[in-house]
Amino acid sequence: MWYDEDSDEQENTGPKNGQITEKNPNDEKKEKCKCKKGCSKRSCCCFKFGSGCNSSCGCGSSCRNMFNHLEYFFGDDNNKCAANPCFARWLVEHAKNTDGFKLIDRDELRQLIMKCPSFPDMSYDEDLEAWTKKWQTISENEKLAHTQKLFRMLLSDDTTMHYYSFCHNDLFQEDCYWHCIVCQECLKWREWHCGVCNKCMYFSFFFFNKKKLMIFDRIYQLCGFLLGTYGVSLPCEGCGGRSQMSGSF
Image (cartoon, rainbow, N blue to C red):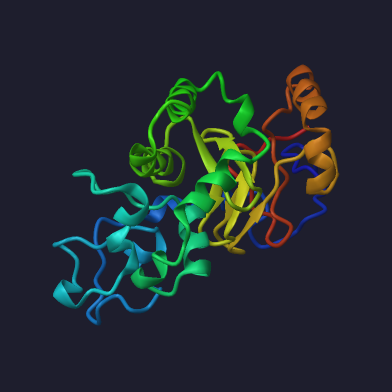
């Protein structure tokens, strides 16, 4: 049920009913960690966000954060990249440490990206289009560096217009999807994270599950714009809290 400020009766009578409880965990990234045991645990705030530690962190020379050594994927660039949240989750699942990175076949990873459904339709993304055209003409000796450039474009925290989602095996626009580091899932921009219940809620005009909503998303957008409800969200099922973009009928 939609929250209605003018209604005397509310179906959701949770303790936070009507209050803004949205809290994006991805915004909590810190500049340094305070670890004192070398960041061997995945509770390290740098590790949590797919970032390497730096000289201002508390871990010092004993640091064992595997994200310190992402040059295997991103190249030896002076500007060190962090893994974007979705790639970071995938790396944690496929590698236990830095040595585990080298067991990942970079060419297979590139092929996985290039074979995803949306890759052939990226002509409107100038960076990806330029990368693809160059890929078709370069020599074998140049392919590794060019592959690492693709990874920087789609897998780092400094992505271009799109990023590659391992959750959905496809390319998504940065401003249309995001990967929640708590729920560990790529979500549409209409989904929001409730800080009280610590889970994501879905923006929806239709009461469909996610699979059906993907089919009807275009219809939803059109109806939403016509009715003025596009981007309006459901309250949290757990506590009744609302997002910044919640609205009412």
